[in-house]
Image (tube, rainbow, N blue to C red; front, side, top):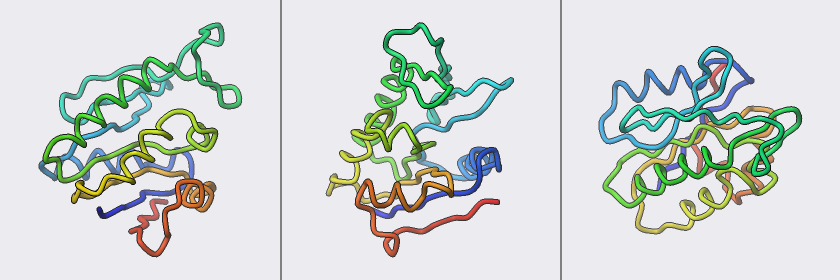
Length: 154
């Protein structure tokens, strides 16, 4: 498996870069995370379906990071799309993004570990990681930096 990481500051255009990249490629699946009218969404790359990843503070299943509350149901929905991509002949799988939530072993943490252990996936895994936590993510998921194509997007 080839691993590429798109990294850069918060709101620097990493997802927009991926949207343009995806538009020029075939056989890409997974999830991107556009911000639409100041709300964060998950978008299934294959069918363009979107789900709001944000939820209210009173949602008992919410995943919380700082002042943000994320929908566990939306993460589950996005995880199914990524898992489905892993079971097909997809050449490129995108996960936008691996961040503080995953460093608390929530969000896509378990899913990413499972993908990294897959020996039968011969394609490329593209992850989005904020630059300030890149080293921490690599360490947490036991990804060797020398085995990764890091794309600095600034």
